[in-house]
Length: 223
Image (cartoon, rainbow, N blue to C red; front, side, top):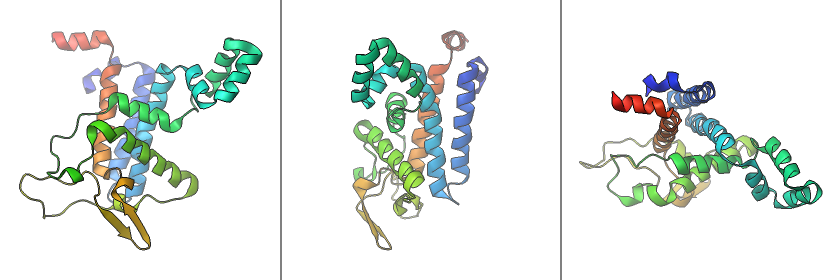
């Protein structure tokens, strides 16, 4: 993968380095400050998702979906050309959570090879991964905009020597969790931090692979 870096466009390579920087920061501080680690990993996704949305999603469609009433009024006054002109100025601002969802849906990695034996400890990878990422983005927004902390169970390590042979660490909390005066059900706790780090890394690498120019991929295949 690193050998393909020089073939990327200047914009893509810059976005990739920014995302990798946030991802690395998240890993470094995961044990000392897991809440900041969540924020860094979400930002790593968002950096690339914003770029991907800007490059691939039609601004007019996004504007019409997000602000249907305004879109109708603008079209009534100036037609489709005016709506298109207005929408392009909002392109980077629209649907912050949606762009991350869309990005993960397109580039999500395959499930981990080593998974816990109990299905209650697993993330429903095929059907619910994107929804789980949406919940994580909502938690991140609540922390940044209203100061609501991440649920305590998502800030707790998942080690221990009680695992059976062939088992692996749980991917998500199960049952009911309590801390102080607070209580959380498993449905409110999408996944543990290590699983989100795996998801972010896999999505970024899949996007990187798609961003390699076709002639570069062909040259590697011939080699």
